[in-house]
Image (cartoon, rainbow, N blue to C red; front, side):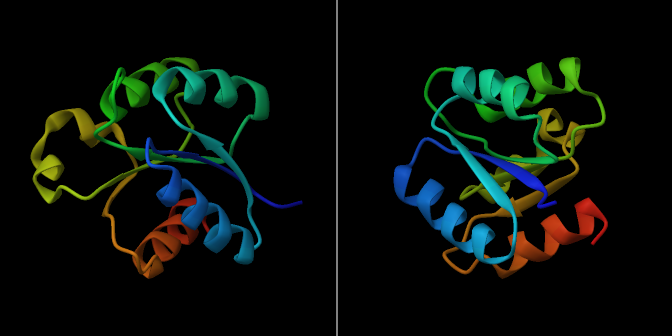
Length: 118
């Protein structure tokens, strides 16, 4: 059975890139465009892992991280952002990993494998 990944990002092109690349890796991929949708979908699809954009309108990734951890403390989450300075924000420390966004998803894929134990 394929592991389920919920991709949360406000940029459609990023969501579609992640879906394409992660589906090729054998994962079942679900997409959310904002924090509220992410929290709702996490309850519906019970993902094995969540990738979260830090900067989003409305609820940011750190708020989503907190909300999801309250419901499922064991849910692995990877913060993904184009802004490396967020790595020093204590709000992201509750995540399992932190990846700076690139169009090359090699680091993200390797991090997902590591976090999922594969």
